[in-house]
Amino acid sequence: MKRKYSGLVLVLSMLMIVALISGCGGTASTTPVASPTATDAKAGKELKLGAIMPVTGPAAEKGKPGIDALLDSIEYINTELGGADGYKIKLDWKDSAYNAANVNTIVTDFTNSGVLMFTAMSSFEMTNAMGIANKNGMPGLAIFTASSLYNPPAHIYGQMPEYGDDWVAFANYYMQNIWKGPGKPKMALHLLNNTTGLSVKDIANAKAEAMGIEIVDITEHAATTISETVSLTAIKAKNPDVLFISSTPQPTKVILQNAKELGMTPDTMVIGLAHASFTKALIDLAGADVVEGVYGVYPTVTWDDNAPGIAKAKEYLMKNHPADAGNMDYLSVWCTGLISAEILKNAVQAVGYDVLAKGDANAWKAVEEKGFQTLNYGVEGIQGAVSYTAGDNRLAQSVKLYTIKSGVITAIGDWVTAR
Image (cartoon, rainbow, N blue to C red; front, side, top):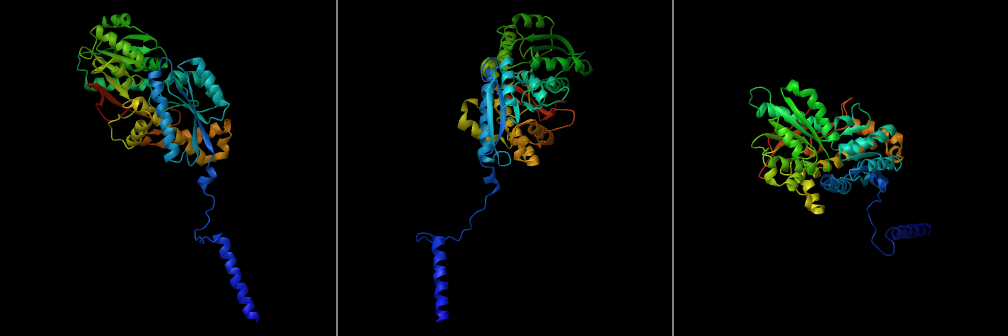
């Protein structure tokens, strides 16, 4: 009797367990309950990235595709790559309107709002941001850069080679592949009256003589210029072999249109451009006939390249911002998102989320030392690889030479070292 009772208790106990497991007559599950994963623990936690973009104002032709690209790349990173080491990146972007006072207000706001690092699309914007950023120790990534941003090096880094590097790369190409002599070629410089132009002025003055080039004229223009006929007439009188322009698309359009009116075309002289203006926006503004045969330097591949990351950039562009198709500024800033994510990933892996979550001086120090200064990243082949060398805050070394043929920016060589 005792044995039968014990057996009955055992059977009833087992039935109760099954009922509890299966619940309300359902079938018992054999799937174990998952323990919280690392991704679960990171859900809802964000790493904040600031961005200063000239979406309106005199450089809007660059800022609009720039912000489109940054939004798209952060969407790609968060939705397909899982953010930075599992943490979503929160983008806090502001329109500077290419105005210095606006930049000062924006970067001050960044220092007080938990931003871990920030980007600025133009060297002009970063020039006005760097005083506040360097004083506070907040690291910044300049997309389009000038040597003055990191000489001496502090907390600002260059995503790509700067405009002076463009001049060196172009001048080397010209001397090796175009100039036939005799004597020294005569070069005139037409430069935007901020860091976009001054960076070229400084390096050309320092290196031209040793490279066998005579600088016969240095002229500056404003971003809002509507005519450069007078300055170009003076340049033409000096009979230069080369005209090199470092500016943005809108004023470059004015210069090239005025030059054509004066007979200063690629048929009569070589014209080269630094990368700030050498993009599809210039072709659209000036017209294909005006830019035909113009040379340019740019630090990314083109949309027709087979670089590993191009397909994904095209996918997001066509999904979200098809009007930017063919724009190389979009590619530049797409890379900004990828590089920023890599920086934040390195930093959070090194010091942990809790350190970065405070968004304070210690977080900025960690992002700079464990993020920026540990970079070793190929940027999916879209621009030159980025890495840090002590004492030199330019993160990339390579550019490509291009020319415009039948309205298309066409590569004329592989990557070259711009330093």
